[in-house]
Length: 340
Image (tube, rainbow, N blue to C red; front, side, top):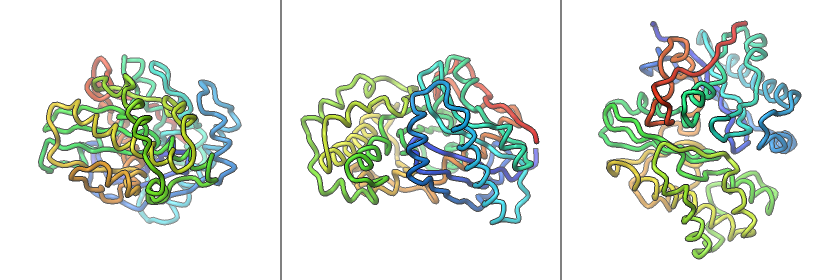
């Protein structure tokens, strides 16, 4: 297949907004990274999305409102480029994740009709039906992105939940490491009326409660082998234990510490650790990782780029998940295609 321009859309569990990115790909190789944009959600819409978290059957009107914002993001990005868009990868908004059930709110058909472009959506269900966790799906993109790099290496994505990909030649191992930005963001909104801890600076004003952190890290999830995955709210009871800057500092330490613990579950320690996602901008998390880390170029758009790449793989019938990345019984090609 000749490479095509695909657009990926990602609205993560941090609930901050939509990432949209263009990639020229044949689903196996990345030929060019195109334009991208970030469409933030206003606080009122964020609160509306929060009402859907934990719901297996989200409100159809909220699903349509969410899709409408993705339509807006697509139109804005189309207006920024002259590249011929052939396909859209639409992740949707995760509202519930407890394998074998995973729910991504959004209307693929509505998006296709409004944009006039075929849309690949519902990426995770087929993996769950094949015994997988339905997450993470980005590892095969990480592998393509890091082609030619010294291995073994690890790519850590810090979104609402943090996950990693271990790459050693053709070996891919992946899973969620623990909380990412979501709990920090929840406390920032609850205690400070702010959406997130910019640059991780507020965490530096608080003191890490080492006793509480040590207890949190005893949670059995952190010792479970890969592959494994989490719902956004899996650890949400933690935020009830602490307040203010102490809570932000301790949760930030939890994100960094759980990533470091996860590295010890891998076959080898990586030669290099690449960090992407919104958490790569949190300088405190990056510093507390305490390792040789680098931020991937345009790292906050990696997941959006990945769903463009995955959409092309679905179009070609190529696998999007694998036994060592999600726990599926055999490689699975997930996703449905809606045509305008």
